Image 1: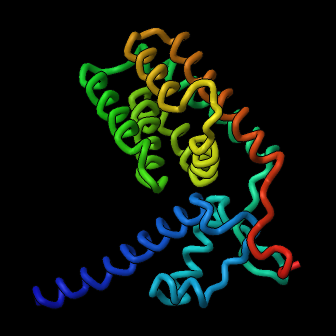
Image 2: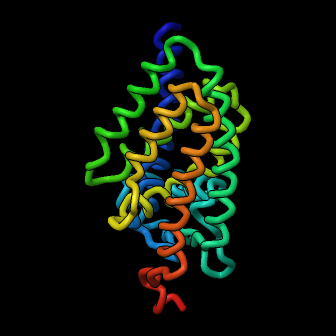
Length: 236
């Protein structure tokens, strides 16, 4: 009886773990630009590369479609979603409002252990800043903001941000790669950290707004002059 129960638990757990791994790898491949905007996602090569079944690939594509990273084109199938400047503007506007509010509230409503926790989160971002792949840096950045939202008690706002997280990460990958920013993303996040811990809500909101304005300006240069998608000419 105990043996059967153990077997059932293993069967139930393995597919979920596999889906999580495939989703993460596909998401990072899109964010890293391994799959270009507009590029078709063909099931068979994906199955071969990942070593998984068509069912897992299809489930992953549906999941990434819900995140806004994939779109289904009639008579063409799934492709990597394009991210236009108009869409990016809306995402930055949502971020400015939600992150600015969370930072301002967090500046006046933080618990005694938050100082150290936010410092560790910022240090994790700094450690991953020079990684050759974006995955660790984007996760560390997400963790930094999650800490601020939850300390502020803005869990519903964080749920909204999470639904946009795939597209937010794509934008972050674009802006992190830029070498001509007047102020680095790390400097902006340090300013947000310092403002929140100084318990100055106005300064915290201003630090967030400065960061997002800078990132939006950088993203605009990329998105108004997008590179052609790989294989686009032959796909028509």
